[in-house]
Image 1: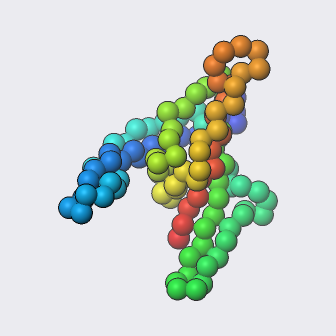
Image 2: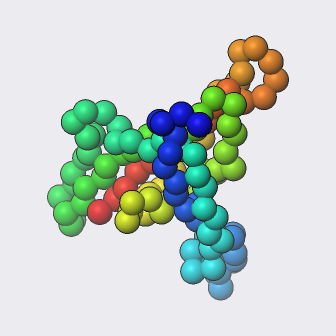
Length: 117
């Protein structure tokens, strides 16, 4: 394993349930937690990219990049959350699975994550 891919996180996957109004929503109280190792998670950009919104309340959104090593696929969905370094991050958009240029399968996986304070 490369020195770059030494971090781990907890994947949080919530089941989809129906509320009393017949709306589908995620049940985060009963989410399954799975530890995932061998990834690289870094702030997106230097300096760290963040956005502030002060219209209704003070919020700061910071983005992070997650990447796996070459040849490693990752069971991660855009509806999952990630617990990493004391933060809860949301997967921001679709998870990118880069195809292997020399054969079938995945070369590596990338995902954009966001933390909303």
